[in-house]
Structure formats: structure tokens, C-alpha cells
Image: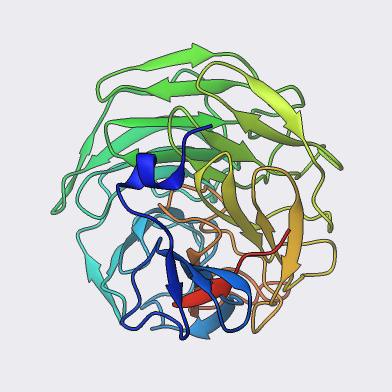
Length: 331
């Protein structure tokens, strides 16, 4: 076995006090206490805090971007909407509307300057769509239709030129997965269990799908080729919000159990853990697409429904604080 000095070029220091200033990754021995120590960036306990309100309360929006540079679009106010709003980490600004038919329960992914809206349903007549629109940071233009008209599924994608959409309702629960390459859609391997009103998130090659309608105990992980079943979450719900950086780091929150729930759960690649609740039990509607770029340490819960017909304009921000600290190494 190689020695520490051979790997790092120096021996482990003997000290009689903790390191100061803190230098992440430094290992040393406290000769006065007999402890081995390492300097780490340690995560604290996550919590939700209030952000700026949407200009128009609505539910079932598409979403993309990050916590400090987000975009939401479409949704049901009612009626179905073409509205687009941008978030700067403090407040929302209304910008150019979508150009196609007003819709809600859309799929969305991408960034604040490059996003995709796909499919959805027109609230006035319940017609399911496969319309696609592309956002360039200023305005929307028509894109290539996706293959299957549907609503209320989930999506993942960190850019507007690379993402997937999966599940939903075509008239019945769907398991279909489609991939976007910036110009066209390709059908990929299906979910193991069809469902709608699901949550998700991640990237085109690493994503999550949570339980939802017709999926009472099925969570799945996407590896870029196929879906695999993973551990069940603690609280069944549909219409929840979702954020993920990939299939090993994600968050689901809110939803309808029923009734509406404030429960938040974190995924670490192995298990789900219940964390701090939302301030108000809410069926999120937006973020349920999972298109936002988040993780189990950073997410937005935007708009949604707090009761029958009760749309909300609130924004809540999820953050997990971290601190660099000297930590004792234990067996």
C-alpha cells in the first residue's frame, strides 16, 4: 500500500490545535487529543425560505433554469396560459408570451436563455398537444413537434438543446420516453410503469422519475439508455415538484396525497429521507416537470394549488447551508 507521503508529497502533520485558516482536504493528527482530523465542507440541514411572488398565480407550468436564474411558462390560471416569467433570485419579471395555443401541464427543461416547452393540454377543450416551442432568452418560436401528444408527465434537461420527456397522459397513462437533440425528437426505452402527474429532473443521460398517477410505489432512475426501479419514497403523492442534478441527487416536494402535502424528501442515490416541509401544503404543478436545474441542495417551488381552485403565486427556495470545518475521523 502506498504511503500518504508518496501520494501527497508530505507527511501528516502533528498539531496541538486545529488548522486555521481552513483548507478543505487537509488531514492532520492532534497529538494533544489523539484525534485524526480532516478539513471538510460539511452540509447542514436544509430549509425552505420565501422568495418573490409570481406576477400571475397559476399551476401546472413548465420550468427551467436555476434557483437564481429561472424561467416558468404556460400554466393554468385559469384558463390555460401563454405567460412567461423570469426569476433573478429575488423577483419575477413578465416577458414575451408563448406563440402557440395556450396550454398547461406542459413539459419543460433548459435554462433562462435557452428552454423548451413541449406538449400539454388546452384547458378550454382538453385537447392534448405535441406542440413544441423554443425560447432563446427573448422570444418563443415554433419547434419540431414531439412524437406523442400528451400532458402531465415529467422532463429533464440542463440545456435547451438536450433533454428528455417521459410519462404523462395520452388518454391513458403513458410510459413513453422521448429525447430532444436540439432539432428533433427520438423515442427511447419506456418507463417500467406508465404514469402521469409525476415529478422528475436531471439531465438527458441521468434522470429521476417519482411516483404519481398509476404509480403508487414506483420510482425509477434513467442512465441514458434505460429505466431501472429504485427505492420507494416515504409519502405517496402526485402533482409534486421535482429537482435533480442527476439520478443520484434529487428532491421532491409538495403534491397531492390526498390532501395536499408539504412533505419534502431528498434522494441520495440509495434512499429517500424526509426533510423540512414547505411552508404551505401545495400541489406544485410547476417544477413537477423537473426541468429546473437543481439538486437535493437547491430547488425552487413555484406557484401551484393550495386547495380546490386556490392558485398561489408564492415562490419558495430550498437551500442546504454548508460550512468548512475541522472534523474528527472516526472508524
